[in-house]
Length: 359
Image (cartoon, rainbow, N blue to C red; front, side, top):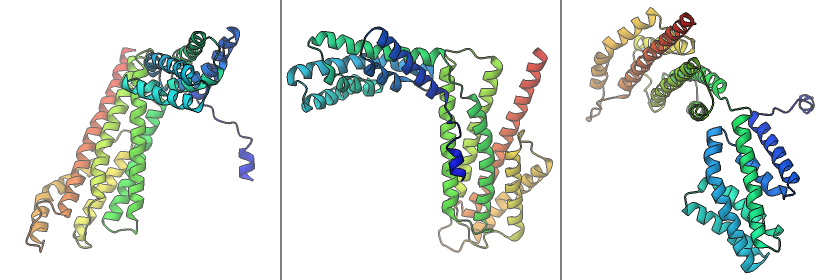
């Protein structure tokens, strides 16, 4: 029943999909008005719409000469072998090879499509065919670049801010799960923790891509100082999250024995982990005094615990950093990042106050 209702739900259309449709429409309309073949221009328009206006302009400067190369090679091989299978193969292969040699890699797809698509429609005059195909391809490139620049300019800021917030929530949850697995509190399978960690890492990498796209987009479109400040704040939060994930990942490689820590030691460590998790989830990342007291206690006992656990190790070879010490070290490192995060949140609040005063 649910599946049947979903058939009637509207299909979500993103801005890039919409711009592709508009580019195809305008390209086809221009070609029809000029009595030029539509298919080459439309194919080019479809594959030319990029994530940002910056990419569209930059890649258009690459795709045009690449398309010229593809059209020239198609004309050359058609003149030698006619409309045969070897013509298609050589046109495609040599277009890819030449474009790669000339470092026009980002234009290889358009150039290869131009080369093979024009072979079935050659006119008796090869020179006319060459300029017609190059002209229609150019129309597709120009139209899609113009549409991407002027119409619905990409804005990744909402996705960036939402992802940063969601990633902190997911990381806080994973930290607690890792603690339960580490101290054998729960029957959590290691591979599930690893899958969650990889998922967060992938989402973080995607967010970094959006940050790069947005920076490139702002090279051509206006933005306010406050927008840039908020954007930089989100990027700094993401950088700190990367550090947190680094220390959290290190905890996944630690194997503790059942009685590695005394009960009071384990209780202190777990309470600190839960406290860190709560602070990560809090929007302003406020660190309460109680948390500082626990960290101070852990810091004071760090070296004492280190010596105690090293001395208890029965092997002849003594590890300078046994698993117990690494656990303490990583938790203290997580707290250090928390302090940077809290300071960053305070700076953001100060920026907002200054902006409101100036306005």
